[in-house]
Amino acid sequence: MMSEETWHGIPRSKIPWYPTVDYEKCISCGKCVDYCTLGTYEFEEKDGKKRPIVKNPNNCVVLCTGCDGICPAGAIKHPPKKETREIIKNLRKSHVLRPHSKN
Picture 1: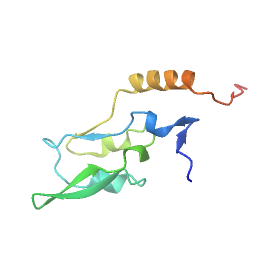
Picture 2: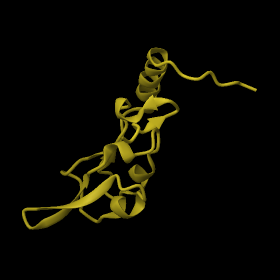
Picture 3: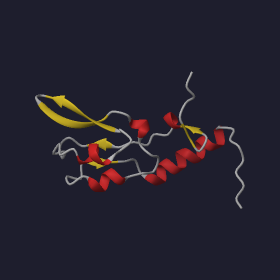
C-alpha cells in the first residue's frame, strides 16, 4: 500500500491548493500544460477542441503560482495564499507532527 503524499507532514489532499482555469478567457495555447512538469494539467478534447484541464490537482506544489504568470490570457487562478496559509496552520494544529528545531 502506498503512503499518502504529504506536504510538511500534512496529507496533501487536505490542502485545497490547485489552479482553476477560466474557460471564458482560456485560449487553449497549452502553455500551462508545458510549464507544469508535475503533470497538474492535461489536454482534454471537448467539442472537437483541445483544452487544458486540471487533471491532477494534488500534483500542484503548495503555494506555487508559476502557471498563473505564464498564461497569456490570464485564465489561471489559485486560491489566496493568505487563506491557504491559515488552512495549513489549522491543519498543523490538528495533525501530530514531528517537532522541527528552529535553529
